[in-house]
Image 1 (spheres, rainbow, N blue to C red):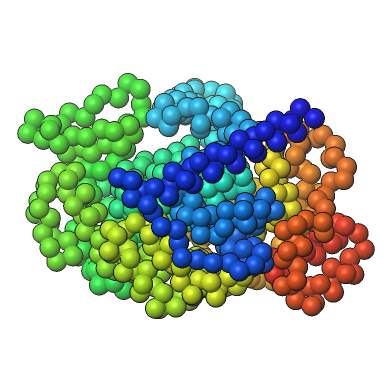
Image 2: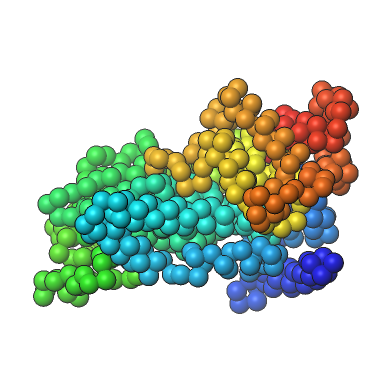
Length: 524
């Protein structure tokens, strides 16, 4: 009863905060009102479709909030969110995490010292045990990052920011299994991606470049004058900005790699001396946390990128190159296309991409402005309910529908469901990130796996609400989906075949399973 009262009080206070934040948000800098987006949802069913697309998936509570605020005001708050207020039980889990309590630099140094100490042990058995302990700690930190992401996706009122954090982490992909990135991916998402997810693309691009996770993943920490490594330069142009076929050449890749020489990661060893930089270059040395620009490793020769000379010197060359890449028309089109594929259609309408690209260039890469142009388009409205859910969206969306805003106490089963469907968080090996199209996720094996996970969520999802894996499940161990207001609102739009299947369900668990595994739940 105390927990229920606490939860109710939180809900009332957060609603009041949301109202005040919305009022403040609608007043821009210098007191100029910011107009609400020109969007509409004529009925509850259409509101549910908006929720399914803009958020991680519609829930009864979010549906009530959208109906109360109206779609234009709700979407305005999503595009320009206020501070994130999570349920106390959820925030407490995040606050207790090592990745929340310990900044990345001392955390990385401590882990490096642990690894070095293990390697230095003379006897094989203690060395093996110490190395195993190190690997277990790395795995625990990676799991914390996954847990924090899932908790926010489930419960954050800033649903669009959460979605865009995932989108950009996939766009600027790093694989946690390479090198020591398991200790870094949480900070990469938290400090390089999330603060800029709805900001300016140029700021986001620069933040990813300066993070040790990216520099280690794409080997730029090894890139130095007379020992050029082109990996990051190539992916920076091909996957992060201009896109394939945009007109850049191999010579441009080589020149950008030269620009990036000296951009790397500071030594993690506690006793490592500062680089002995040549006297003439000492003013160019930059150290910011784990980021380091070492002039001794930089190629100071003249460079030409995309047909224009690089005019700056040292680390300023990198900023000049990023400015050029971020503001290129090809980047506007490539990024706009990726956003439209994610939110609208596997093959987005060219006219929509044209309009989004124009806004990208006119706004100097304002991500929220580009998204607003997309949300206001007739193409977006026409696409609602048709975009195929990748595994992350499928699992999180179904948990949100099934259990609404009830705080999960153990999201590890949910992470396991995502892993079973082949899309582990921070687990894509190559820099291109996970595919955003239906063809990648619609195999017969994938559909069979989704049915089993629909059954797990619909029949025994109570595993999410016990802190001890050995504790008995509460009774009943499944949600009453047939009584959910969100489900009742959506059901009239389901096909006759789906409604017939639901009518033949022999138990509430079967009803839940048939609903969550239905063709309609495969799309958003």
